Image 1: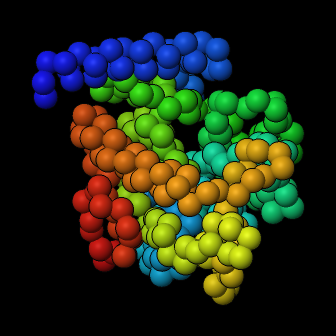
Image 2: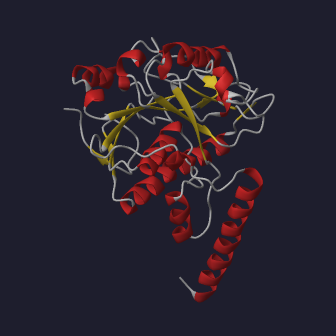
Length: 298
């Protein structure tokens, strides 16, 4: 890199770093709520299994149940897993939701209400529910889960960091910022690293985000979504920004750009996990993620 390019890069990183801290002051704060809520008991468990929404979990979950995985490793579940029959059997120690549909009026629907009702009625064991600190509409999570005393609500920071890599990892070690972690799974990985886990295993994290991608007659970007809890493949549907009211569809350039950033986020998490002395293991068959070491299910 030429000297002029280095100078321009340093100026850009300096500006981005200052902008990040200014945004944190305005939108969030500098507390590490994840560590404040308590670290893991390293004598009991050094491994956490993160359960994704991908269709491969249909094959992997029965194996985890047969192995009674929850007795050997801690479990982190996400999104609508609480609506499944397996939820009360596995009793996840951690639960993460981060999509705007869970706390914004735009996109908040009947299925989200069913999720909160399930959490309110099913959780009879100690469980930590991690939610985004950023909550512009002041959604009341405690009321949504029926004030269930078994659930501790823990906020996590999610403002995207751009700037110096050394400052970036300094922030991450303190629970601040985000590497544009575009999926709830990535937020789960970040939380697990904050808690001190040295081995993080991924199940049901297919990330087949380009499968079934198309544009309909109205020029809307559509995709066939497939989750482990779907009984059959759903038809292609428009992909919307849930944070806008009314929701607006993505353009193809926006969707592909965000998808690329999502996969870059996995590379950031891989590098950060190495700095933490931890390892992220992808145990999902046919996963599109290429950032982590792979280990097949036994």
